[in-house]
Image (tube, rainbow over all chains, first blue to last red; front, side, top):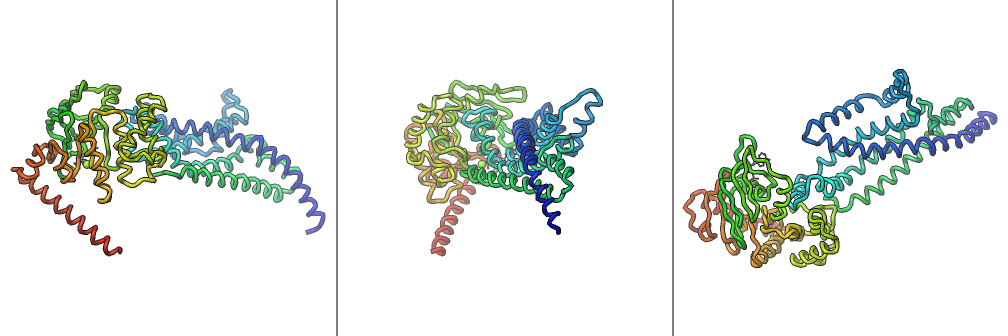
Length: 225
Length: 264
Ligand SMILES: Nc1ncnc2c1ncn2[C@@H]1O[C@H](COP(=O)(O)OP(=O)(O)O)[C@@H](O)[C@H]1O
Ligand SMILES: [Mg+2]
């Protein structure tokens, strides 16, 4: 490798750090956090609707999960961003990203929560009901807190998965972590260097998330029965 | 005080309770015995309305319920009624994410909407009563089986029930822990608590029971004082069952002792 080539790579690396960091802080992290939060609230509702005995609730919930799980995120995103304008509905890139990722988190995490709720022994329901608690009280005080503990590991995995999947928003013109890298790669003609740096960024943040997940598991793992 | 008439419970075509008539008087202890699958748990659950009977009637204090296919129970009345009938489960079913104190306070704070300070005082008093005052800040998984079961009793007592229902409260416990739970129940009986207990602890039944019920295939096959049911039953099935469980009990203990020796 010539000196000149090495210099070129170093320049590209240097040029990429700023935009990539910018894209991470402005798009990748906010999209991940907001979508996960909205998705989690929706996931609780979808899980409860899914578990309900009433088809008025469980049918729509199952239909929603079926649609979302059966179609690729990228296709959903393209339908909203490139498709809807055809029928006169224009959605900006950022809201599109939030919408699609929130719905996907809702669908997948509702399944995690549903399994967690079902894993809580029937006796816990009975014990709550036996002291006169209503369905809503048992759910809120007894079942959901325990289901939340059970869900910490799979939800942690889901969040890490989401963080990486947000790279798809590059394809609807957002300059997120990966989108920024793509632009720098094109302008410097150093895709190898720039994409490896992008990969290192993802690796760094995902490692942080893993650490956080371990801490949460420790905290919530106490007094589980 | 508790009056049950012609109580039936069926799951689909499976008839589990087939016409139960039972009176439990205030301040007495009733023991229910019977083979596995005879409907003992179901009967107890019906008394707390955790299971809704298919037919018959149930009356406790001011509450009267008629059951039938057309009879819809008011959810609020059912919840109020459940507070009057405390339930102690075989598998304790304590809330694992709450401390011992919180377990006992839960009904007072959430159901009764009592303020926390009063609820705390009462819960501490009840835990004192079952000998667990020092354990208020522990979590259920830090207690022995006997202690867990005593917390279960305190939790059931918190709402001042008129009657306490126990479903095999000691059958999941190591033999050396059974006594501490039975002692609490004896004390409560002495204080005039009305209790219905599903148990095969014959010593306890002899000592404490005012009435023993033998349940078989959803019917009451025998009833009376312990002396009557245990010694003078005219039913061959009852006598067979009693001799079987007293054998099983002896063998079980002999085996445990043998095992204990071999470990040493
Ligand atoms: N939810 C249910 N659905 C169908 N059958 C049930 C249900 N609960 C209990 N049973 C049946 O009712 C019978 C009595 O059960 P149970 O009251 O638990 O008996 P016991 O406590 O005396 O062992 C059993 O044959 C059991 O299979
Ligand atoms: Mg039983």
